[in-house]
Length: 291
Image (cartoon, rainbow, N blue to C red):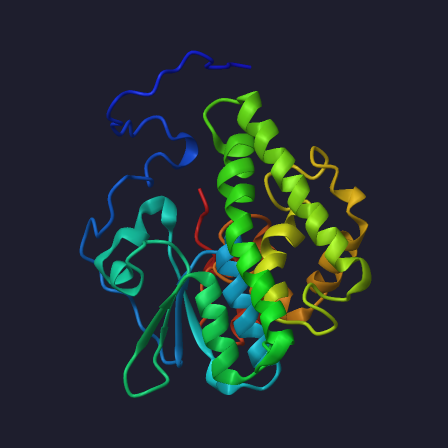
């Protein structure tokens, strides 16, 4: 293990593009487009540009759950954004999301297209548009919002903190791993206590709070993130594990986590989704090499 204990920050920080580990080539201290590239547009009301990271999976789960309820207005095209190739810095994507992060959505169901970015904003937009998975008013709505925003504030410590230093950093440093492992376990304990007497995170109803939290924390305890389940002793969070398995069994969730997925076993991947039948008709020759 290499520990850098005598680092003194410079008076003015400068960018070292080679020091960022696995994602050094796509992280940079400036925003905006690096190249001109229009986004494709399909025939459905919702145009999603994404990748099956936890944040992307939130939205494809929501769309599949809406379709499962019969909301045909939620039909969508899901276009693959290859963040490793820098697709998120194309001019069309930057127009959809100036922050250059997936997912981004164009809602083309009205007279004028509406851009929606940030995964929680997309969940709220769709929940309010279709009137499901979010109470209309009152304490129940506030509780759902509490947990959606809990996830938005907490998950960066799991992903950019623990996940980065444990799985992706160029070297293993004990201090950040210990620091963020401690915080991740604290967050799992928060969830475990919340779920001790509740079926779902915000109560007895399945909501966008579950859709926001499960792709991060549910998949973590199911052993799908960072190969860290044993390290974090996730089996000890029995209530989170029960909840995670219940969400995982939902057919819409199983479909949603496949969309825009380019990694893992081939049968778990659907690089782009343009019709519901794509889940049944996809074949090996439709899958692009994943490198």
